[in-house]
Image (cartoon, rainbow, N blue to C red):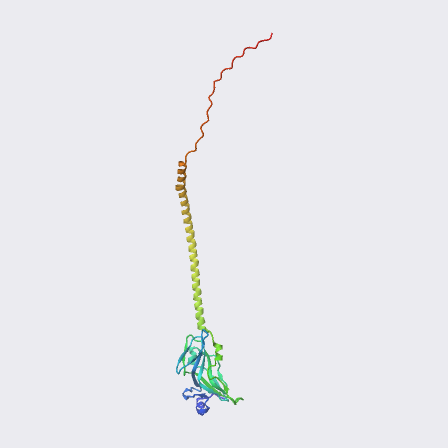
Length: 271
């Protein structure tokens, strides 16, 4: 069966139109444009996101990399012999908003449509309550489905769905910024390391020069102290110290004259 045309939409009795409230001005080339409803959920970097009620025409924004739940103002009552297809207006897509929830509406569905979206663009996407951004196409089936009771859908944002998108978020553009920042920090660190190495080399050379100069100064100082301070003090102290007393010289014996020995009388002969 073909997709519904504008004429098919307009020809339906008001109680059979699958969208409530229905505004014929929202029909555009075989599709009906639904609008943003009364509440939205935005994920938070801190994980503390919450469902935000929106006043009439109140604006909100979806940051780069941020996830959101947006519910429609209109309630959809799908026929049992038709299936719906949903999307986001191309203009909003060009801003970076991507539908990540689903792309069809089951036959017999009854409730508002809940869109899970993500901002994959480089900047925030600004939206407001009542803004018509969600097109709906209907296509007839060759026969009605076997189920005859409506399928209950969403009337508001279900808190049980929030867990799946709660927490921090990072877009491709944010990752690019992070990589660029890390690269800049890496380059800065390399420059600092090179500077530190050059400074260390300069300090080593300077320390060597100072050591040589200091060694020469110390040597000259020690030589000066030895020659002009210590040596004169040693000489002065030696001169001032009294000479040790010498023992008196021993008496020299006076030589005695040697007298000739007396002549011995000749010995008498024995006769």
